[in-house]
Amino acid sequence: MTDTSTAERALVGATLRAPDTMRETTTLVTEASFASPVLGVVFETAAALWSSGQAVDAVTVDAALRDRGQRGIDGLELFRLVEKTPVTANAARYARIVSEAADSRALNALGMRMQQLSEADMPHADKMEAARSEWEALSKAGSSAIVTRTLGELLDGDDAPYDWLIPNLLERMDRLVLTGGEGGGKSTFMRQLAICAAAGVHPATFKHTDPIRVLVVDCENNERQWRRQARSITNAATHYGTDPRQHMHVTTVDDLPKGRVIVSDPRDAGAVHRLIDQHAPDLLVIGPLYKLSNRAITSDDDAAPIISALDGFRARGVALAIEAHAGHTQSGGGERDLRPRGSSALLGWPEFGFGLRRRSVADGGPADDNYRMVDVVRWRGDRDTGRAWPNVMYADPRNPFPWTPENIGPATIGRGDDERWAS
Image (cartoon, rainbow, N blue to C red; front, side, top):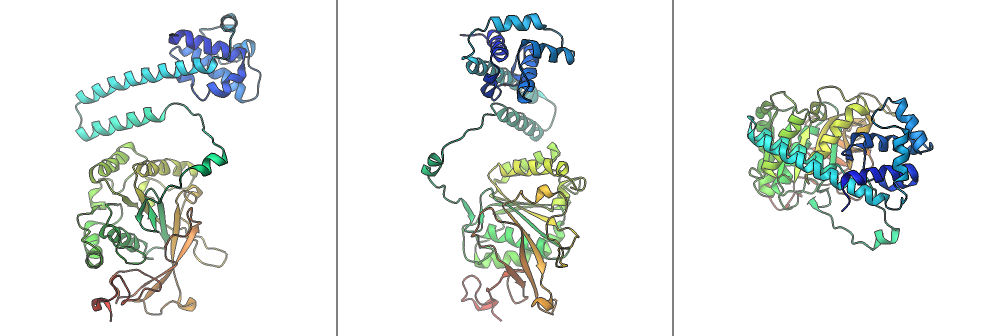
C-alpha cells in the first residue's frame, strides 16, 4: 500500500506536471489535508494559480512560493517531484489516499479531544454540546465534489411524498417568517399556530389533524403574558382537538439570562439544541427575529451567522416559525412595507414569508376595534404553491380563536354543530 508521504509527493508532482488533474483533485484535498505542511502549501499555491487561469509548472509555482516568502522547498526540489512522477493518470488516486489519511488523523485527534472532554471539570451539558460541535465540524469537512445527473435520471426517481406536520400547510423543515406592524396581531397568530398544532387543530380550517410536538422559545413575552393570552386559545384548541398541554413546551423571556437568544453565539445555539434534544419537537417557534441577535441585522454579514444557526436547528428535522418586525418604509401605494426589517438576505431565506396588514374602514375593514380584519400579504413568493395559508383573517370576539381565516364563521368552525361558539 502506498504510504501517505509517497502519495503526497506524487500528488504534488502530478499537479505540477499536469495541472488539469486539479479539476478532480481539488475537490478531494486542500492544503490542510497534507501531513507535510510544506507540500500542502505547494499544492494550495498551484491550485490558486490554476483557478485564476495562470500557468502552473515548477517554475511558476517556485516564483509564487518565493513571492510569499515560503521556505522549506525550492525550485530544484519541485523539479525532482515532477521527474519522479512520470504518470499523472493516477493523480485522483493519490488525492484519495491523502484525503483518507487526513480523515484518519482528524478522527484520532477527535478521539483525544473527546477523552479530554470526558475528564474536564465542566457541566455535563456543556461537554455534550462541545462534543456535538466538534463532531459536526468534522462530519462537514471533506470532499467538495458536486454530483450531477441527467434530467432523465432525475425524472425517473420517485416523487417524495409530503412530510406534513400540518396537512397542506406546513411540511417538516419548512421555514415561515411572519411580519407586521407593532400591535398588529402577529404574536397572537404565532401563539395560536403553535397551540393549535400541538392540539391537532388545523390553524387554517380548524379541522382535526394529528397533534405534533411544539417547542416555543419566546424572547419577548414573559410567563405572565403567556398565561393570560394562551389560556383561552388552549381551551378552544382542546375542545376542537386534544389537550395540547403535554405536546408543547414553552421558554419565555423570563427564562433567558440575557433576555434574548444570540443564536450566532455557540453557547446560546447549544442551549437551543439541548432543548431540541430534550423535547424532540416537530415545530420550533422562535423569536422575534431581532431578539436572536445582539445588534441590528442591517447587512448580509449580520444576517449570515443568524441564518446559518437557524438552519442548524432546521437540520434537526424541525419546521421553523419566526416572528419579525416589518420595516418602517412605505410602498409605492403609501402602505407600510411588510418585508422584515434589516438585511435583504432575510427575504429569500424562508419557504413562506407573510405580513399582516390591518384593513382600513375605507378598504372594507370594520369600524369597531373589537372586530379587526387583516390581509395576509405575501412579501416572498411561496417556494411551494397551493398551500392553505389564508389570504384574509378577522378577529371577532364571538369566535373561539383570536384569528379566524376568511369564510369561517362562529358556527362553522371545527365540528360546526356545537352551539357554544355560535352567537
